[in-house]
Image (cartoon, rainbow, N blue to C red):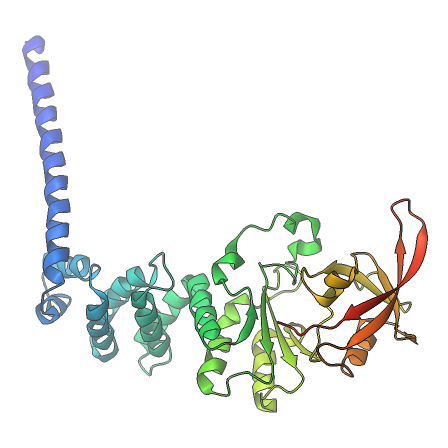
Length: 349
């Protein structure tokens, strides 16, 4: 009896597997057909199905709308903004989040969805606003990328201009205390607000969208952004106060029109000068031959006691001016030497 039952079970299981595979293939083909038909379809019936009492209709509508074209996304965003049904709004958020996660941050659909979520995050409807903010918070890297890309289009001075480099692994992270990011590296966003800063509300709003890069705790989180206010910038006192409130005083720095291109190491040097922690590639200091671990003790014959005194002196110069730095350094054999190094000053960009 057993020898007859086992083959029957085997055939039954084989049949079930075949049916399952056929079902998956049929479902995949249906998805392709739905996506193709959606491109030409009127979205009104599908949007209505998002609020249907039928679970099957609701799910079919969600699946179909996840394949919406760029043009149809405008309709979806309008529906999201205007619907009074919180359940429909929740499903629309789910759909928009899929489009927001497009691998290409420069795609038109990402830009459309980004603006819809940003607008909804500040609307009067609590549920819609919270759902939108939740998506933006979870996709904070994408939000940063969108803000940076638009600031680049506005010709704002910033580095790196490709925001995706911010997320690349930093091979030297383990060598720095508390895992801090080197401000001269491509993992650290630098914004330079100078006299050419676009004086409009849009640029300032984009700047505030970078708040995910701030450090909530100096001891546990790396700072991923620095904002430099260059002499002659057009920001109002109130705007500077807003930025400091968002990013903190340590990430907002006022600087002269010229950039030496060094990072101070405050643990050394004391009142004897500026100990160079790192040198930014291609900067004034780099071109002149200033090295890491150099000690800058004077500029144009006047003593430099600390980094702030050096920054203050640089305010007297403009791009293209030359200064003479008195530098103390060690040779390869560990012997101390002093050098006078002429530096041609560049701007921040």
